[in-house]
Length: 433
Image (cartoon, rainbow, N blue to C red; front, top):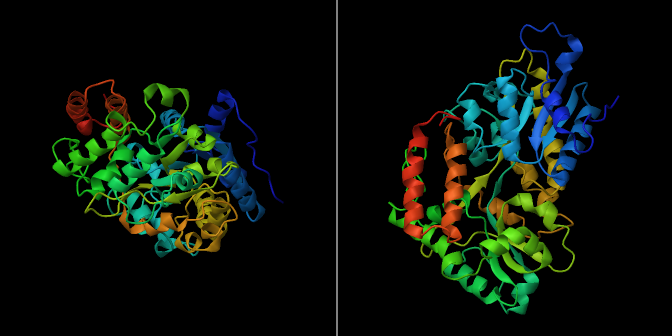
């Protein structure tokens, strides 16, 4: 008999915390047989995303006696706070969905049950089913797979086809350059419209540095500092990125971005290009007034294709009496049926390559028409470091980068502060000061 998910609608804070603590019986708890077959899955997402996971759970429960409680939160910062509290209290969720840039904090504390042995013993899944780039991002020690990557996305350019047509511009194509991007953004700016919208963050800058032959840190495997100013190739990319705002004015200035986000402008038809990952698609599919599509990031002149991996994975909490039910859910979610369900929601680029290359993903009835873009860049995807303190480092770097991007701090001073003030954090433990 199918059991409907116990989560329905937006839950109150107390209810969510109670749910997070209602995981399967832990060590020292008598429990019963039924508790071994009930699991809690904590994840983040907006209403459209959570609806996809709800459908996934419903399908899973149709063929399994495992009961799943979805425990959703709105965003990744809230998820990190909930997980930290749950692990500290000794009652973590059985399964949680986490981005590769954030799981290092928990992997370093050995509170994640590595999935490598479960995958090796599986009759349902095999490593060859999935994107190597996504898998590698979740090998915390560089070898053993820590979590199971659910999706494979990248930073891309969403563009308003109607605005491009009106300006007499050709649609962006593979191989276009920074110069092409800037020329298009300049032509599209004016009359209340801006050419481009992009969040000033490390993960937005990184692909441009990589395309130009640089890197944002001194050692991706064991970083000790940012290299935004010390590496000439990286500095050129950083300056090009900052110039979009500070010199060319093709992106909304601070006050206007605060009053209306770039995504909202794109939805309203007053933004020519919008840089984001696949996460934007469900919301963009609500657009009715114009045609839009997706294109790869522009390359550095004389550079190479590059983008940053955007991937979330199912992780299992360590220290629980039984992981069988949790792994059974992950096997279903990562199988053809589970990956197909989420692909149909529009939110994810399946990490499972057979589903990603099927018509389910590549030929949807709704835009974007050029979904092949997400797969063509797969060989060129790169990841930021996965160290224990990276989540905090990235957050503080983003704050300083935004100060520079919006002209609140002078460029040289801001970039120097970003490198000097954050250098000690590279040696700090997860959550340390």
